[in-house]
Amino acid sequence: MKPELLVFGSKSFNNTFYEIKENLDYSLVFFDFNKPTFNIFSSISGILADDKIFKNKANLNIINKFKKKPIILLQNTNIYDLDNFDNKILLPVSLSELRIKIRNVIAASEFVTNSSLKIKDYFLNKNEKKLTKFDISISLTEREVQLIELLFNEKKSLSKDFILQKIWKYSKDADSHTVETHIYRLRKKISNKFGDDNFILSSNMGYMVWREEIK
Image (cartoon, rainbow, N blue to C red; front, side, top):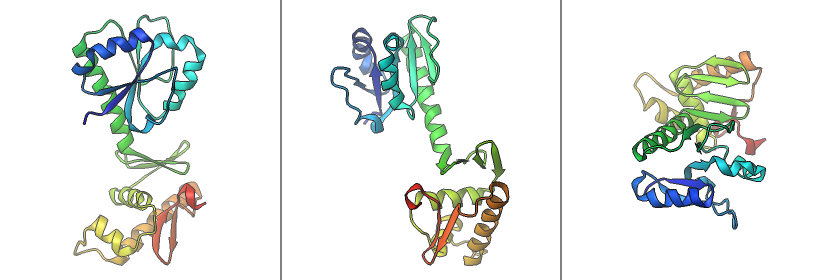
């Protein structure tokens, strides 16, 4: 099944994309302003937006609901200075160029999404191996990045044996003390830089990273 793009524009704008939809790499969903529904937000990969409709401020409020999705603004002129769009494509444009631009914007967005993780007030950048809070960052080792991601994504306390299996794959030179040592060093690094002693929580069940629902 093709990933979906939301077409967010005027009737003529929608008609144009309806005519070329078979030639795109994505399935298209057309936003109905008369019967607006927002239950499609989680399933779409991005939005193709018509610059003309933003003369109506109410439409800007609607598009703000898509903040986490890449928005590709297609412009008929250069007179609109609309910020907060991932890309702007000046029309007219060839179909092949349009396909390439859409593909590049979506791919770039997916790369950023997959390479970063938001935890409390922190951002974990997996590619740069950095944990950042506001304007302060610390560098992490590959193991530390793996630890944070595993502890956060599992959404429950993890035993030392489970962590050992997932990250060290039962390496001959690793045991439960290896896990304890790495978590101790990571906690100390975070505490020294951010003054946060509760980033990694521990209990009789094991370890986990702080989550909103366990405040």
